[in-house]
Image (tube, rainbow, N blue to C red; front, side, top):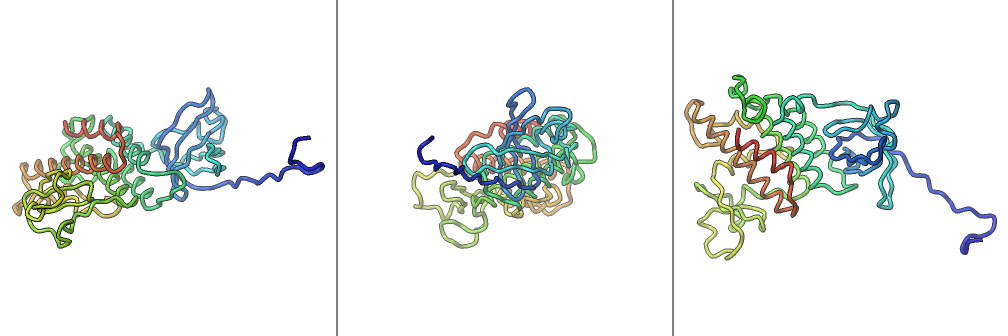
Length: 309
């Protein structure tokens, strides 16, 4: 008889509760010929890493397998010991078909999943961020938020129309901002970090990642010698200042304000708005990598494609 076990007594088994939630799949790997290990961003329980045994069997409770960039209702047995949880059911709700209609939209979708993967911890729920992620994925490849640019059907340089490129860019930008905001890392863009006063007007601002904010060059004299400083155009800061906590923003509809012109929209204005949006996306991505000390390959790949569009 094993030591520590009294005769006639069996160890008490604590039942593992089953959790019902909804989630989007952000990572998956083959575990065996019929099973998968997966990483899910759930609305109410945060990121859960689990095993889906028999998920690839035709007759299973997993809608034929768990795929990236899909949303479903699930039932999962969550382990509290650090072991992988057990997914028992995956009832598919949404496949986000717009996100799969062009290579550019698909890359944008992978970038959004990369943001979730690198910014979130297990069992740390962020329902508002989850909602922002779902809303952003739904806009991929839709041409929404593209204004007059999206209607011409011209190729956007990444396997879709100009409108698709604009909506893809807006979606990735939205999720980057929402992730930074809801994890407590959003930079301060309205107050000068040196003077604690509202920003004074300038053509270029100093973005200091270590301080999590920006300053006008005139207020930066004698401060933080040797600190990392990124010089950012005022139009880029003005665009980012208008982002809501969920990252929503109609990038093309505010073109005149964003680039500091007051005349009717024309081709040059639209082109400058596009450039401003690309700069804003690149800035947030660079800051995101700095904050989380990671190399986000999927986001980088999308931005490289977007810069060519």
